[in-house]
Length: 98
Image 1 (cartoon, rainbow, N blue to C red):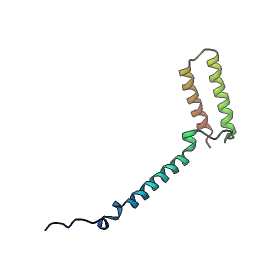
Image 2 (cartoon, rainbow, N blue to C red):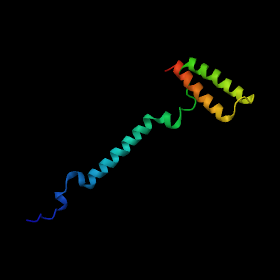
Image 3 (cartoon, one colour):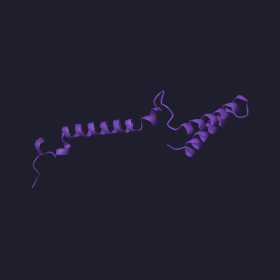
Image 4 (cartoon, rainbow, N blue to C red):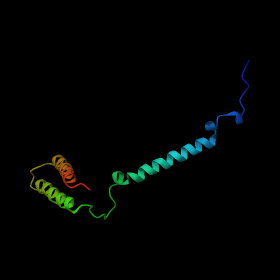
């Protein structure tokens, strides 16, 4: 016995266009939520944002100033300066967490 042809009304509810529109809207909303949650990671902190930890800011000023001085004196090249800056930021964030 052959199956009768399916009519549009006999489709599964998740196969209908309305379900696909809802899924697409939900996906877009979740992507927007993730972008909002990680906005500082993606775009950096807001301009003019006050440092959240004054001890960390002082540490960063000192360490990054040392790196700038070494670059100005020609002791290190740009690649080393980038590495030293990253290490200085990690050190200060580790010593003075939020």
